[in-house]
Amino acid sequence: MTKKRFLTGITTTGTPHLGNYVGAIRPAIAASQNPDAESFFFLADLHALIKCHEPERIHQSTKEIAATWLALGLDPEKVVFYRQSDVPEITELCWILTCQSAKGLLNRAHAYKAAVDANVAEGQDPDYAITMGLFSYPVLMAADILMFNATHVPVGKDQTQHLEMARDIAQRFNHRFGETFVLPETVVQENGEVLLGLDGRKMSKSYNNTIPLFLAEKQLQKHINKIKTNLLEPGEPKDPDDSTVFQIWKAFATPEQTEDMRRKFAEGIAWGQAKKELFELINSEISAARERYEDLMSRPADVEAILQAGAAKARDRAKPFLAKVRKAVGLYPLG
Ligand code: TRP
Image (tube, rainbow, N blue to C red; front, side, top):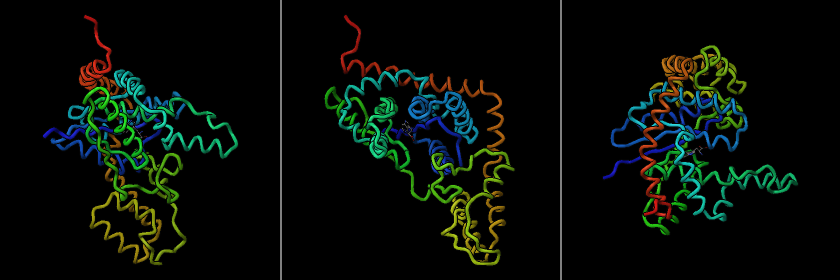
C-alpha cells in the first residue's frame, strides 16, 4: 500500500487565530505525527498576492504563520514545510496546467463568480477589478497539489470546489498525455471544529471577529472578555448550546471539563467567571507554545533557514516529477 500523502497550504495574508488553530493547525500537526502518512505543508504566498496588495502584510504574515506552526510542534524533519514561492517548479507546472484548463470550468469558480456578481449588483462592469490571478486561482492550487501527487488534501468547506477542479484538470491531463497525476481526495474539516468568533459568527478574518492565537496573556484575557453574551445575571441558568463562550470552551476542554462547565451554566455561572475560566483553559494549552513563538519571531533568520531547507526537500521531489510532466507534453532536450 502506498503511503497517504497529505498536503495543505495556508494563504499568508493574516495572523493565525484561535479558529485557525482549532479548525486546521491543531488537527494537521496531530495528523503529521502519524508515521503511516507523509505531510506537506506550505505557505501559499503566491495565493496571497491575489487578494492582498500590501507587501508588508504578506511578509509579516509569512513570518507569523511559519513561527506559529513551528512553535506548535510541527517537526520540519518529519514533514515537508516550505514556502510556495521558493519552489519555482510549481509556477511552471501552473502554466502547463493552465493550458489544459477549460475556461468554462474556471468561469464557474465560486470566488470569481461572487466577484462578478458583486460588480453586476453594483452596476459596475462585470470585470471591474478582477485580475487574471483571481480567475486562475484554482489552477495554481491544482499545481500545488498535483506537483507532489498528494492523495489527501485537508481544507475548509469553501475550498471543496477547488479540489474538484484540481481533479478535473488532472484527469484531463492524464487522458490526453497518459497517467501522470494522482487524483487527490478532499478531506473536509468536521463541522464541530468551526470555532465561533467574538460576535457569535464563524471566527474569520473577514468578519473581523477573531482572537489571535498568540496574544500576550493580558490581551488574550481582554479579547475573551469581549465575546458577546446575553444579559442574564449571575445565578440565572444559562443555555450552553446558545453560548459562544461554551462553544469555545468545548474546543479546548476534555469531555469531563465540558460536562463540568455545562453543569455550571445550569447553575447560573456569571459570564465574567465563565470567561475567566475560559481564559485559563486556553492559556494553559498554548502558553508554552507562545514562548516558543516569541522566541522564533525574535530570530527570523533561523525560521528562514528552516524554510530554505524545506524548499530544498520540496524541490528534490518537484524537479524529477516536473521533468516527467514536461516530457509528457513535448518539452524535452533534443537528440
Ligand atoms: N486556497 C487555500 C485556502 O484559501 C490555500 C491553498 C493554496 C491550498 N493552495 C492549496 C490548500 C493547496 C490546499 C491545497 O484555504
